[in-house]
Image (tube, rainbow, N blue to C red; front, side, top):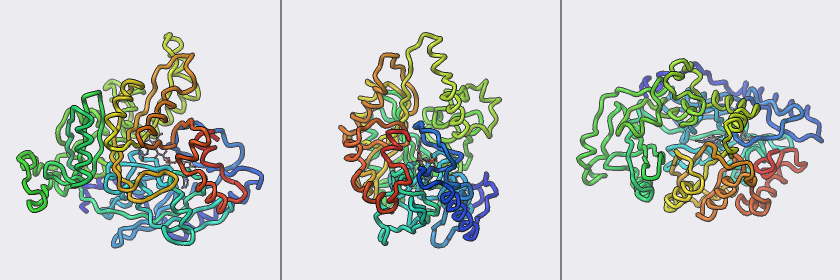
Length: 489
Ligand SMILES: Cc1cc2nc3c(=O)[nH]c(=O)nc-3n(C[C@H](O)[C@H](O)[C@H](O)COP(=O)(O)OP(=O)(O)OC[C@H]3O[C@@H](n4cnc5c(N)ncnc54)[C@H](O)[C@@H]3O)c2cc1C
């Protein structure tokens, strides 16, 4: 890779195996210091979980020194990474070698362990699946205080396969060996508009199959539903020079006129960490060029569109909002303050507006049902925009049983709707749970969930979870998935 893709590289050093061992020893000492009668929890500074949890009463597991990259094998295209390493640090390090993880979730402070145990997703998921599907092996610190090395086929294969979507209830990954893929300097983008959700769904199915659109290779694919009748797919093509590499004639029989017209473009890149806002550019431009670095973090600067709630997209405010504070973790902290002091609720009451329900969810719907879901969502919830990210799981994972090889679209929506003071608890969130399962989909568990225990066990294979937990945590030192995800412990 040329240096230009990593033009914003920070100085991050590999930490090496001795320092990693010292960090694991420190974790173990913190575990030993917790009384056997106490529940064990993680003590960690950042989080991208949305659901509120009971406050920890005692000291937690000290994972503070588990936030680095241990080693990279550029020839074998793998990396050994500590469990709490953020993707921001991980990518800074891998880009030096012209490599990136198979899937890089959009928010900079999501950690590798968090994304594997809590199911991250991004625009490469239509060809690479979810982050856990490019993990080769893991060291997991279990409830009995041991570190076990788990692989897809070894002695601990049960833990390897049950771990994704277990949210730390089966143990904490301290080291993960992951696969990396090569990238050039640039991502050339096409924003393709659709007037009907079903047409978008058909295009997604076609791209999953052919890995190209209009004769041009597609390396990354995500989309936005702005309004009913206004849908976009953003198709990214990895590019050496910022132009679109047209698929050779023998692969794409007849590259269309449009494809020829687009190739190649000069590498003048856009920058959405300044005054311009990325998600607006989707409606405003047909094509764009970003460095791969900026493409990976295109959604972090404004937390998709959510920074608007803090005024950060208003040019009068944006001008004075320090660039280094245009980041998802800053908005997450602001949101935490709002929740702590009930600011939005108070403003609503003062203005005589009905109370709000927070509707923050990501759901997976089979591609052919996404139109039905969006129609229903418009009528019943009425919140826009909605982020759309196609994915195809490559294997079977019991705790999140997507059908391997089937195309789903992840729909992500993060906001509030007015429901009024007399509404039952979380009416919209509950209706979404019902609708998603009616359509053959699944719901991720990083936010609020309201299932009863039987339904939960049916959807997330509770019997298998309980058996694996019993094997690795016989004294129940870790909180169960149901207690974490639904009972908010
Ligand atoms: C508004 C919002 C939008 C989101 N959008 C996206 C998105 O677009 N793409 C995407 O990929 N994801 C998205 N997420 C979900 C996010 O990837 C998951 O919540 C993920 O689990 C967060 O990882 P984290 O590193 O911040 O972990 P944390 O928030 O710290 O922890 C998450 C859970 O994982 C456990 N955990 C943390 N580290 C480990 C470890 N090493 N081993 C085992 N368990 C561990 C914790 O105990 C906890 O239960 C979104 C979340 C929110 C709130």
